[in-house]
Length: 141
Ligand code: RTP
Ligand code: MG
Image 1 (tube, rainbow, N blue to C red):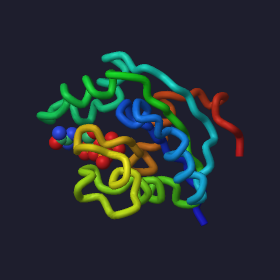
Image 2 (tube, protein in one colour):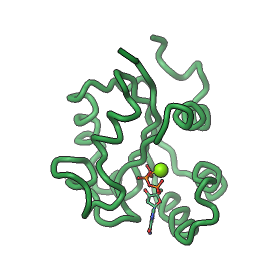
Image 3 (tube, rainbow, N blue to C red):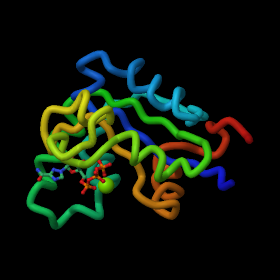
Image 4 (cartoon, rainbow, N blue to C red):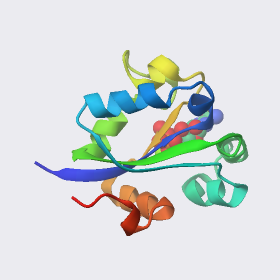
């Protein structure tokens, strides 16, 4: 059994649609514990830095504009295989391709405005958690 931590962001579209509680329920009902959380309205520099791996992609400017368009809810999720488990609960990037019952299938509108972010590897999870949280802000195990 591997207990992992992963970074999750509820994006501005879902925060704006009052979906924080319903998305938190998905995490909690599926064995993921919220061990740190903060609401934040990202500025351009913070969004660009967070998504720096995508800086040469054609959708980068649109992505940064969207991620800075309103507050986001940022959390650290902990649980068994948390990285893959969260990606499974999120569903595919494009909500039209997301499996039924996933967060994106149920709550997202488009490939750009797709409700949630989740770290895609254990290595990236560690980097992304450190981007937003000091170690002292996360509940100890
Ligand atoms: P995320 O990083 O937000 O968890 O999403 P992901 O892994 O499923 O997808 P990724 O390829 O990392 O893309 C990051 C975010 O960029 C936006 N995007 N827009 N317009 C487009 O074609 C397009 N493609 C990607 C989405 O918000 C995506 O979640
Ligand atoms: Mg990604």
